[in-house]
Length: 612
Image (tube, rainbow, N blue to C red):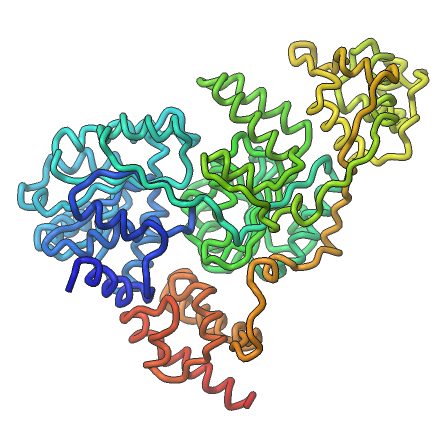
């Protein structure tokens, strides 16, 4: 049996998969040859198999997986043990006796995958015997962007891992991350002392995720749209990312008031409360999590169906990492981003106060360009990661609803006139209030209600004015004086428009009513199939979900660790009623087949007996 045939046999028996995806086998083979590597693979792309298979194939050895979060370690170990794979963790949560037993099992060759934090590894490895060291076949550094000062989740403890290659030069090192631009990749190689590492870059495309951006919506309008969107995904799991701790709590409270099962998650909560929220979400006992970016890296949940950004993220890497929490099972998922000028102001302040102000400002600008673009969003996203993508995706809001262009000169002149008549002393939101004719206290106090332009734009909603003012800023009709209270300053080009010497085109604002939204993503992604093709039984699928939930509850594990939604859909399509048929289902390995074939095939047989 060749090396690849042995790997495929393990893949089928342990994981229930028939073939490797993309570059997985190339990465595994390179590692088995003793080579160092940097692996860039999107969330849900199968990174874990790249280091798990080498550990399983090592006859007398084991792979060390360096992971930043205990929750992530525990989830992966639970999932591996469900597949019958000997995996353990060495960490501070365990007692001294438990950790000592783990080391003894390493000595005996009874562990194939050891999960450990960088701090624990560096403090423990010096105490291990030569016999244990000789068994190490791989150092896998997960979430490797944490090692870089340019990474968006910079973690100082990771920077010490470079000593591993110095101390153990013959053990291959694999650095894995879902997002890293060129500067971050180079820094990872330098920090880990693997300058000759082979770079494996998988496609960053997640075609199952529909990309959508809503510009200009604020306050109650935005909240109403979020509620409408969530209601499209009734009984499905989703994450809402917010900028601040306070906004996560407010969002969760308002959603709960409307009967939507939602809770907040942020770094200011107690460890116990955070663990409870995460556990309930993983177990499908909680529908929506409203979170800061503190939530995400430790989530290995395959059936998250949507991610909402209530505010614009600070860079494209963060955005890509966060939307990658959705659709890890490969089934249709949605990403919805709300974007306003206020987000830009807030994030610019954060960027200026950071240690790398120039770099962070440039990354924010690229994120802003993505949100404002009138071309296919997937093209922008993939081109950012240096991946050629020369066609429209037909699964983003721009492709599905191309912007309508119109002569926006009259609206531009209204706004520019209002700016000039304030002496260029008004911020964007004040200009909107003037155009809409709102008699707020600060408007009256400054005498802006006496301006000729007061109320001339009542025909447009606040969201429409917000969107058109954003376009005017993007087109260069005015600048923002950030050092003067964010006051707007009309440019020479803007004056050409104002005085009628030039015209300007706008993208027409499109009101987003998610109550009227049609579920087109699945039809757009899946080609027409022959009539004789088996159809998935949705009623049976729900009954299989109940079986999965009951097993997960009794076993005290998350439902997706029993089987993914993709496996359940395959069961609801193929309807296996014997052990042999059940073993052929996607994601059913030898161990899971033996453990679970009876309850699932019994449920299917019972269903068929009542629906034949």
